[in-house]
Image (cartoon, rainbow, N blue to C red; front, side, top):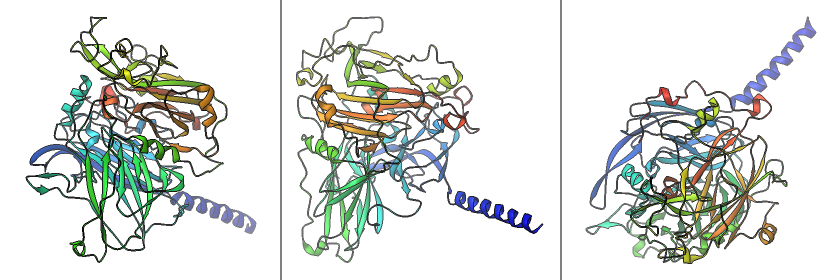
Length: 588
């Protein structure tokens, strides 16, 4: 009896220990009420869409391993989904929140619960609306802290999100409609830092409010820099200070010093900033870059904030406040150099590059056109009134469904007639992809721009090693392309300028410590090579994170089949999931 009691006690102790270990993970719950709100900036009152009255929206703070539960309440007159950008969603594809890809939009007056785990990721991610252009104001940070509380760099005194965005006066739903019609001439009025336009923007001589960050001399701060903008990549600097880059997209990086961060739409970059300058006030600047002429030009988008040392008077002791020297807005090379410096902090047991490749893709990214009259096969090109400008991948412009979701159709086996699984592995014809003579007024682009809209996907077996080389082109414009893959992190093996040369450029691939990302900035008229293994079953959206590119069709989706066990298979939809036919679908 005694021996049995001791054995039972031992088992009980082990069970309690296991429960204690499990109990370390928490359930983090939020309620997101999405509604309209009026905001006045630059002498105009504008209707915007927000969560809980906040712009940017609420920050989600979790510890690695926690479960997140968000109840979404839609008080908008439009459909809505929320995407948890960069969260791996292991076996929880149903919660990914990609409109018409993994779910239909939540209709006005509806509520929906998202539930997912945050495992194997530490750093900064973010969340945003994923229907129409609503992510311009419906967004916020996701901060994932290490479970043991230890960082591979000095622990900062404080961390703060630096959310770079844009201020739009045009209604965002109308903006989406215009872009879907091939119009990308609309522009925001200003850049924003944490929702503030900054004192460089003014109306009748009254400057806008700036974001202000108070620091203590001698302390170190972790800046979590996120680009939520619809249109632009941004340069970010703080006068008199340097940064140590330590992470990106929820993964650690090999630290390196820089005085400027470049962040593309969709990216999240973590940097340490030491408050080691002479105590005073210092301006921070977020400046949008853009290609030079002959590309279509946009106004200068800039926001200015303030670093303020404790104990310094509001007048900065009568001294002028230093302003950082920024690159020319048309100089995109600093972006290329910055992204090329990023390498991963090696964790061989977790981050091992697959050395074999099962499937290879060469994907060109550019613009094209379709005839405005669908009954015509021939129409006048070169941005004429007879055509609609679209965005393409391998000359296919993605046509998403509008009454169903791709994941539901795949799961139910009813995808026939909704999508095909023949997304091309390469463009239909080779050409000089980066010839800037293809930017209008042309005429070299005319023969290359005809394309078509289709819902072409690609299916992969579980545990397939996939390599993609993205090639930015100069077809109709020469912009960069921040490519985001849902449900996966991938290795960025290399980036380069010009046309990718498979015989030469493969020798540049970094197999030792490549950066691990969910969004890769494919440089202007350049290329980027990524590799990943399909170990997460489901339906996963791949798209450019420039909003006009995604609305105009620079997207596809990858189907990943189930693995051999229940643990490697997509489970049935959870009880809280609302199927398209049963949720009173309302299109935006």
